[in-house]
Length: 121
Image (cartoon, one colour):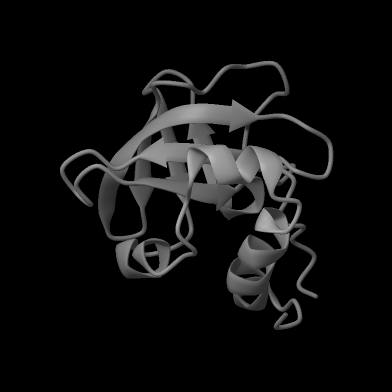
């Protein structure tokens, strides 16, 4: 492993637990992807749900907290270390299923984990 736990914010990200990121703009390495619609601060399952707006019309994407490299409070921006295509290729996000399906986190770990040296699930 490269030392990045994908379900937790990096200590260098600038995110402070309790600071709400809802409404912040999200920037991939190659441009904007949308706004934070939900922030989960649950231990072992921290993530952002991003409303992609016109970028991927009507779609929401889940980004594990480990993808966040920097939070700029003044700019109200969150910077992630994935490209738009990598984010677009992530597992389909479903509002209801992510609350009731215990396997949702495993699917995202299987997709994002290898980017950070984790095993392919």
